[in-house]
Amino acid sequence: MIIPTAPLPAPRAAAAAADGLTVAIDIGGTKIAGALVHPDGTMTATTRRPTPRGTDADGVMAAVTEVVAELSESPLWTTAVRCGIGSAGPVDASRGTVSPVNIGAWREFPVQARIEAELAARGAELPTVLAGDGVAMTAAEHWLGAAQGHANALCMVVSTGVGGGLILNNQLHPGPTGNAGHIGHISVAFDGEPCACGGHGCVESIASGTAIARWALAQGWTPTQDASAAGVAVAARAGDPVALAAFDRAGRALAAAIAATATLVETDIAVIGGGVAASGDTLFEPIRRHLASYAALSFVRDLTVVPAALGTHAGLIGAAAAATMLLPS
Image 1 (tube, rainbow, N blue to C red):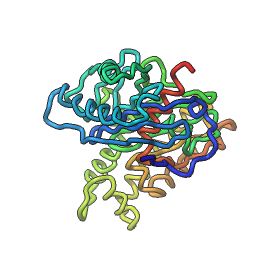
Image 2 (spheres, rainbow, N blue to C red):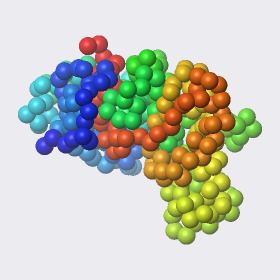
Image 3 (spheres, rainbow, N blue to C red):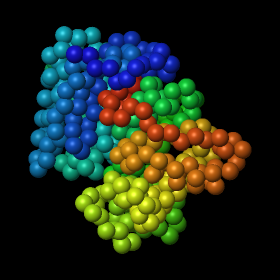
Image 4 (tube, rainbow, N blue to C red):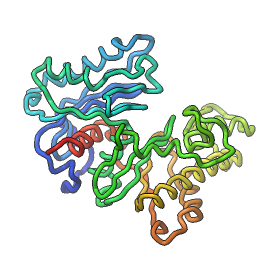
Protein backbone atom coordinates (compact mmCIF):
# COMPACT_ATOMS: atom_id res chain seq x y z
CA MET A 1 0.00 0.00 0.00
CA ILE A 2 1.26 3.51 -0.84
CA ILE A 3 0.43 6.17 1.73
CA PRO A 4 0.69 9.80 0.56
CA THR A 5 1.99 12.19 3.21
CA ALA A 6 -0.09 15.07 1.82
CA PRO A 7 -0.93 16.60 -1.55
CA LEU A 8 2.63 16.91 -2.82
CA PRO A 9 4.00 19.89 -4.73
CA ALA A 10 6.56 19.53 -7.47
CA PRO A 11 9.85 18.48 -5.85
CA ARG A 12 12.11 21.46 -5.18
CA ALA A 13 14.75 20.50 -2.66
CA ALA A 14 17.86 18.48 -3.35
CA ALA A 15 16.31 15.48 -1.62
CA ALA A 16 13.54 15.24 -4.17
CA ALA A 17 15.88 15.16 -7.14
CA ALA A 18 17.36 11.75 -6.41
CA ASP A 19 16.03 8.59 -7.99
CA GLY A 20 15.25 5.28 -6.34
CA LEU A 21 13.59 4.23 -3.12
CA THR A 22 15.01 4.99 0.31
CA VAL A 23 14.71 2.63 3.26
CA ALA A 24 13.69 4.92 6.14
CA ILE A 25 13.92 3.97 9.81
CA ASP A 26 12.58 6.26 12.54
CA ILE A 27 13.64 5.40 16.11
CA GLY A 28 11.99 7.09 19.07
CA GLY A 29 11.21 6.50 22.69
CA THR A 30 7.71 5.15 22.02
CA LYS A 31 7.91 3.59 18.56
CA ILE A 32 10.27 2.29 15.90
CA ALA A 33 8.88 2.81 12.41
CA GLY A 34 10.00 1.97 8.90
CA ALA A 35 8.96 2.62 5.31
CA LEU A 36 10.16 2.58 1.75
CA VAL A 37 10.04 6.21 0.64
CA HIS A 38 9.58 7.14 -3.01
CA PRO A 39 11.26 10.13 -4.70
CA ASP A 40 8.02 12.11 -4.44
CA GLY A 41 7.70 11.49 -0.69
CA THR A 42 5.01 8.84 -0.74
CA MET A 43 5.61 5.82 1.46
CA THR A 44 5.23 2.12 0.77
CA ALA A 45 5.23 -0.83 3.18
CA THR A 46 5.00 1.29 6.32
CA THR A 47 5.42 -0.64 9.54
CA ARG A 48 6.05 0.05 13.21
CA ARG A 49 6.77 -1.60 16.52
CA PRO A 50 6.57 -0.22 20.06
CA THR A 51 9.99 0.61 21.47
CA PRO A 52 10.72 -2.18 23.97
CA ARG A 53 10.90 -1.30 27.66
CA GLY A 54 12.72 -3.14 30.42
CA THR A 55 15.14 -4.88 28.10
CA ASP A 56 18.78 -4.65 27.13
CA ALA A 57 20.37 -3.08 24.04
CA ASP A 58 19.88 -6.17 21.92
CA GLY A 59 16.25 -6.36 23.00
CA VAL A 60 15.63 -2.90 21.59
CA MET A 61 17.56 -3.77 18.45
CA ALA A 62 15.33 -6.82 17.99
CA ALA A 63 12.40 -4.49 17.33
CA VAL A 64 14.46 -2.62 14.72
CA THR A 65 15.32 -5.96 13.13
CA GLU A 66 11.63 -6.85 12.91
CA VAL A 67 10.91 -3.56 11.14
CA VAL A 68 13.72 -4.14 8.62
CA ALA A 69 12.57 -7.73 8.07
CA GLU A 70 9.02 -6.63 7.34
CA LEU A 71 10.21 -3.97 4.89
CA SER A 72 12.32 -6.59 3.11
CA GLU A 73 9.17 -8.54 2.29
CA SER A 74 7.99 -5.77 -0.04
CA PRO A 75 8.36 -6.54 -3.75
CA LEU A 76 10.04 -3.13 -4.06
CA TRP A 77 12.78 -3.97 -1.55
CA THR A 78 15.36 -4.76 -4.22
CA THR A 79 14.91 -1.33 -5.82
CA ALA A 80 16.04 0.58 -2.70
CA VAL A 81 19.27 2.51 -3.24
CA ARG A 82 19.98 4.06 0.17
CA CYS A 83 18.95 3.99 3.82
CA GLY A 84 18.22 6.85 6.21
CA ILE A 85 18.03 6.41 9.98
CA GLY A 86 16.48 9.09 12.14
CA SER A 87 16.90 8.65 15.87
CA ALA A 88 16.18 10.37 19.13
CA GLY A 89 19.40 11.77 20.49
CA PRO A 90 22.03 12.47 21.40
CA VAL A 91 23.55 11.01 18.26
CA ASP A 92 27.10 10.89 17.01
CA ALA A 93 26.80 10.61 13.26
CA SER A 94 30.58 10.55 12.87
CA ARG A 95 30.68 7.25 14.75
CA GLY A 96 27.21 5.96 13.86
CA THR A 97 26.17 5.74 17.51
CA VAL A 98 23.16 6.91 19.52
CA SER A 99 22.47 7.43 23.22
CA PRO A 100 18.79 8.39 23.29
CA VAL A 101 17.68 9.98 26.53
CA ASN A 102 14.40 8.06 26.33
CA ILE A 103 15.94 4.67 25.42
CA GLY A 104 17.98 3.85 28.50
CA ALA A 105 19.31 0.55 27.14
CA TRP A 106 21.17 2.32 24.33
CA ARG A 107 24.30 4.21 25.30
CA GLU A 108 26.77 4.77 22.47
CA PHE A 109 24.90 2.03 20.68
CA PRO A 110 26.29 1.37 17.15
CA VAL A 111 22.90 1.57 15.51
CA GLN A 112 24.16 2.48 12.04
CA ALA A 113 26.47 -0.53 11.78
CA ARG A 114 23.82 -2.85 13.21
CA ILE A 115 21.19 -1.68 10.72
CA GLU A 116 23.67 -1.90 7.84
CA ALA A 117 24.31 -5.53 8.84
CA GLU A 118 20.56 -6.25 8.90
CA LEU A 119 20.15 -4.70 5.45
CA ALA A 120 23.04 -6.73 4.07
CA ALA A 121 21.61 -9.93 5.54
CA ARG A 122 18.54 -9.28 3.43
CA GLY A 123 20.41 -8.60 0.22
CA ALA A 124 20.53 -4.80 0.50
CA GLU A 125 24.06 -3.50 1.03
CA LEU A 126 23.09 0.15 0.98
CA PRO A 127 24.86 3.40 1.79
CA THR A 128 23.40 4.59 5.07
CA VAL A 129 23.06 7.91 6.91
CA LEU A 130 22.33 8.44 10.60
CA ALA A 131 20.61 11.68 11.61
CA GLY A 132 19.18 12.99 14.85
CA ASP A 133 15.43 13.47 14.92
CA GLY A 134 15.74 17.27 14.81
CA VAL A 135 17.94 17.10 11.71
CA ALA A 136 15.58 14.58 10.11
CA MET A 137 12.58 16.81 10.79
CA THR A 138 14.48 19.72 9.24
CA ALA A 139 15.21 17.74 6.08
CA ALA A 140 11.55 16.73 5.84
CA GLU A 141 10.15 20.23 6.29
CA HIS A 142 12.57 21.67 3.73
CA TRP A 143 11.71 19.00 1.20
CA LEU A 144 7.93 18.80 1.51
CA GLY A 145 6.85 20.96 4.43
CA ALA A 146 6.73 24.48 5.76
CA ALA A 147 10.35 25.37 4.90
CA GLN A 148 9.98 24.65 1.18
CA GLY A 149 11.50 27.38 -0.94
CA HIS A 150 13.62 28.79 1.90
CA ALA A 151 17.36 28.57 1.32
CA ASN A 152 18.14 29.25 4.99
CA ALA A 153 15.87 27.83 7.68
CA LEU A 154 15.80 26.75 11.28
CA CYS A 155 13.47 23.86 12.08
CA MET A 156 12.66 22.88 15.65
CA VAL A 157 11.00 20.13 17.63
CA VAL A 158 9.48 21.39 20.89
CA SER A 159 8.26 18.42 22.87
CA THR A 160 9.62 16.56 25.92
CA GLY A 161 12.90 18.12 24.83
CA VAL A 162 13.80 20.87 22.38
CA GLY A 163 15.86 20.01 19.30
CA GLY A 164 16.39 21.33 15.85
CA GLY A 165 18.36 21.51 12.65
CA LEU A 166 19.55 23.95 10.02
CA ILE A 167 19.21 24.43 6.29
CA LEU A 168 21.96 26.76 4.98
CA ASN A 169 22.19 27.68 1.30
CA ASN A 170 19.63 24.97 0.50
CA GLN A 171 21.82 22.31 2.12
CA LEU A 172 21.16 20.32 5.25
CA HIS A 173 23.83 21.31 7.78
CA PRO A 174 24.14 18.58 10.43
CA GLY A 175 27.68 19.43 11.54
CA PRO A 176 30.51 16.94 12.17
CA THR A 177 28.62 14.82 14.71
CA GLY A 178 25.11 15.48 13.43
CA ASN A 179 24.12 17.89 16.20
CA ALA A 180 24.32 21.31 14.53
CA GLY A 181 21.14 23.29 15.14
CA HIS A 182 20.49 21.75 18.56
CA ILE A 183 18.81 24.94 19.69
CA GLY A 184 17.46 23.44 22.90
CA HIS A 185 20.83 23.90 24.55
CA ILE A 186 21.41 27.54 23.75
CA SER A 187 21.49 29.39 27.07
CA VAL A 188 18.94 32.19 27.23
CA ALA A 189 18.98 32.82 31.00
CA PHE A 190 22.41 33.39 32.55
CA ASP A 191 21.13 32.77 36.07
CA GLY A 192 18.65 30.11 34.99
CA GLU A 193 18.17 26.73 36.55
CA PRO A 194 20.52 23.86 35.76
CA CYS A 195 19.78 21.91 32.60
CA ALA A 196 20.13 18.15 32.18
CA CYS A 197 22.93 18.83 29.69
CA GLY A 198 25.09 20.41 32.41
CA GLY A 199 24.50 24.01 31.35
CA HIS A 200 22.29 26.67 32.88
CA GLY A 201 19.25 28.48 31.54
CA CYS A 202 18.97 26.42 28.36
CA VAL A 203 15.95 26.82 26.11
CA GLU A 204 14.98 23.23 26.87
CA SER A 205 14.91 23.91 30.63
CA ILE A 206 12.33 26.67 30.03
CA ALA A 207 10.36 25.79 26.89
CA SER A 208 10.09 22.00 26.73
CA GLY A 209 6.75 20.47 27.58
CA THR A 210 8.21 19.08 30.78
CA ALA A 211 9.61 22.48 31.78
CA ILE A 212 6.35 24.31 31.05
CA ALA A 213 4.35 21.94 33.25
CA ARG A 214 6.97 21.92 36.01
CA TRP A 215 7.11 25.73 36.18
CA ALA A 216 3.33 26.12 36.16
CA LEU A 217 2.94 23.63 39.01
CA ALA A 218 5.67 25.38 41.00
CA GLN A 219 3.83 28.69 40.56
CA GLY A 220 0.63 27.30 42.02
CA TRP A 221 -1.24 26.10 38.94
CA THR A 222 -3.73 23.38 39.90
CA PRO A 223 -4.48 20.94 37.07
CA THR A 224 -8.04 19.75 36.76
CA GLN A 225 -7.01 16.49 35.07
CA ASP A 226 -3.94 16.67 32.86
CA ALA A 227 -0.79 17.92 34.60
CA SER A 228 1.26 17.94 31.39
CA ALA A 229 2.03 20.85 29.07
CA ALA A 230 -1.12 19.94 27.13
CA GLY A 231 -3.11 20.53 30.31
CA VAL A 232 -1.32 23.84 30.85
CA ALA A 233 -2.27 24.81 27.28
CA VAL A 234 -5.93 24.03 27.94
CA ALA A 235 -5.80 26.17 31.07
CA ALA A 236 -4.07 28.99 29.18
CA ARG A 237 -6.79 29.01 26.54
CA ALA A 238 -9.32 29.30 29.36
CA GLY A 239 -7.48 32.37 30.66
CA ASP A 240 -5.63 30.90 33.66
CA PRO A 241 -2.97 33.53 34.49
CA VAL A 242 -0.31 31.07 35.64
CA ALA A 243 -0.76 28.90 32.56
CA LEU A 244 -0.58 31.97 30.33
CA ALA A 245 2.59 33.06 32.10
CA ALA A 246 4.13 29.61 31.62
CA PHE A 247 3.60 29.78 27.84
CA ASP A 248 4.72 33.40 27.72
CA ARG A 249 7.95 32.40 29.45
CA ALA A 250 8.46 29.51 27.05
CA GLY A 251 7.67 31.69 24.04
CA ARG A 252 10.17 34.30 25.17
CA ALA A 253 12.93 31.70 25.54
CA LEU A 254 12.20 30.29 22.09
CA ALA A 255 12.06 33.77 20.56
CA ALA A 256 15.44 34.70 22.04
CA ALA A 257 17.06 31.54 20.67
CA ILE A 258 15.41 31.85 17.26
CA ALA A 259 16.58 35.46 16.95
CA ALA A 260 20.10 34.53 18.03
CA THR A 261 20.26 31.76 15.44
CA ALA A 262 18.93 34.03 12.70
CA THR A 263 21.44 36.72 13.60
CA LEU A 264 24.30 34.23 13.47
CA VAL A 265 23.54 32.47 10.18
CA GLU A 266 20.79 34.61 8.58
CA THR A 267 17.91 32.19 8.54
CA ASP A 268 14.64 33.77 7.41
CA ILE A 269 12.13 31.23 8.75
CA ALA A 270 11.72 29.14 11.88
CA VAL A 271 9.51 26.07 11.57
CA ILE A 272 8.30 24.60 14.86
CA GLY A 273 6.84 21.13 15.33
CA GLY A 274 6.44 18.68 18.20
CA GLY A 275 3.87 18.11 20.90
CA VAL A 276 4.10 21.57 22.48
CA ALA A 277 3.68 23.22 19.07
CA ALA A 278 0.32 21.45 18.83
CA SER A 279 -0.97 24.03 21.31
CA GLY A 280 -1.11 26.45 18.36
CA ASP A 281 -1.40 30.16 19.06
CA THR A 282 -1.04 29.52 22.78
CA LEU A 283 2.66 29.01 21.96
CA PHE A 284 3.06 30.88 18.68
CA GLU A 285 1.53 34.18 19.82
CA PRO A 286 4.10 34.81 22.60
CA ILE A 287 6.94 33.63 20.35
CA ARG A 288 6.01 36.13 17.66
CA ARG A 289 5.38 38.91 20.16
CA HIS A 290 8.74 38.50 21.87
CA LEU A 291 10.51 37.95 18.57
CA ALA A 292 9.71 41.52 17.61
CA SER A 293 11.96 42.64 20.48
CA TYR A 294 14.81 40.18 19.89
CA ALA A 295 15.00 40.19 16.09
CA ALA A 296 15.66 43.92 15.77
CA LEU A 297 18.44 44.12 13.18
CA SER A 298 17.42 44.85 9.61
CA PHE A 299 18.53 41.51 8.21
CA VAL A 300 16.46 39.46 10.68
CA ARG A 301 13.48 41.77 11.13
CA ASP A 302 11.39 39.88 8.58
CA LEU A 303 12.01 36.48 10.18
CA THR A 304 8.82 34.41 10.21
CA VAL A 305 7.75 31.66 12.61
CA VAL A 306 5.36 28.99 11.36
CA PRO A 307 4.10 25.58 12.48
CA ALA A 308 5.53 22.44 10.93
CA ALA A 309 3.45 20.88 8.18
CA LEU A 310 4.24 17.17 8.15
CA GLY A 311 3.23 16.06 11.64
CA THR A 312 3.74 12.39 12.40
CA HIS A 313 5.12 11.73 8.92
CA ALA A 314 8.17 13.94 9.53
CA GLY A 315 10.32 11.21 11.10
CA LEU A 316 10.24 8.77 8.20
CA ILE A 317 10.12 11.41 5.48
CA GLY A 318 12.99 13.17 7.24
CA ALA A 319 15.13 10.05 7.52
CA ALA A 320 14.74 9.53 3.78
CA ALA A 321 15.34 13.19 2.97
CA ALA A 322 18.46 13.35 5.15
CA ALA A 323 19.92 10.28 3.44
CA THR A 324 19.24 11.71 -0.01
CA MET A 325 20.65 15.12 0.87
CA LEU A 326 23.77 13.89 2.66
CA LEU A 327 24.85 10.92 0.54
CA PRO A 328 26.76 11.51 -2.70
CA SER A 329 24.45 11.43 -5.70
